[in-house]
Image (tube, rainbow, N blue to C red):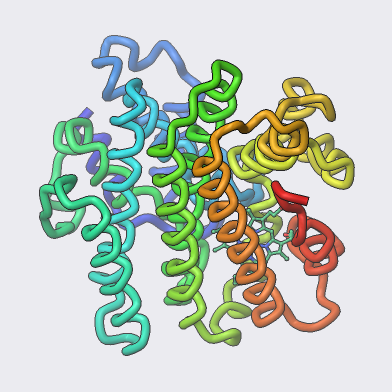
Length: 356
Ligand code: HEM
């Protein structure tokens, strides 16, 4: 196992054409031959499986989608060990911190404003979560062996959940910030599920809302960091990302449904995108969501309701910042990546709010 792991540690390569044949063969074998490694420890096997599946997926489908691009398998693997609610949130915050720290380490001196904003993000996370961290610098991958990654899942995700498809420097920050977004969406999503089921039992857990509000602040600051990328730099690698679009994020779309209900405008996308098809089986227009709970006067705690209002406002603000990003980085009249309408699509979903 160690020998094979070293093989994977070779610097991760760009697109499918340039991946070493040796590495590619290893990933194919690992992904297709389920019996080959069953004698290995379960944990190590699962780790190697998620680690190689990105390369394998690109080989198989010859295309990049959102989930392969941001290595969603690794994020899922990282979160899968956490069963308790508290662990999930703490793990998520640690990961957010490490992702920002990783951008800071790799970008130092490249852009002065970015340096300042990254420090602001790190300070913000620490000030809100004082006792969470055992800080350590992120070291280079080479010094670590497989056991290290199995035992330190956070480093595994930060070191490997990045599969660049170009040599352009700014692709790094782009993927990392999108990963930060996915982690926030994951955590917000799990809290909303709990809030909805609690309200059914007349329980109003303000701690969940406090955490959700903190996560929307992380979304805002990460968008400000991304904004330090110049539009020219974005266009350098955009075409290479093929059809990868965050519209394909299952976790975001599920969060959207639980906040606002099933949007008929989105159903055609859910049906078309393989990763999202399941949403149409699980949810429909009658699904209970935060908006329907407010509308039907089911939220009886006033201060809880006002915190929900704050979350709603911050989420609307994130959507406005995001559409601003799309307008600054995508040339006028150009199509989106996941939709032909691009910015028009975003304008249509922009104002959807928990409070009408
Ligand atoms: C340069 C930066 C960005 C640009 C130009 C951009 C552009 C777009 C566009 C045009 C869409 C519409 C769907 C499509 O045609 O692909 C979209 C959707 C989306 N983007 Fe971005 N985006 C950027 C950054 C981000 C970041 C950093 C995140 C995550 C934090 C994000 C999350 C999303 C989500 C979740 C959707 C789906 C929205 C929905 O279906 O309601 N985007 N983006």
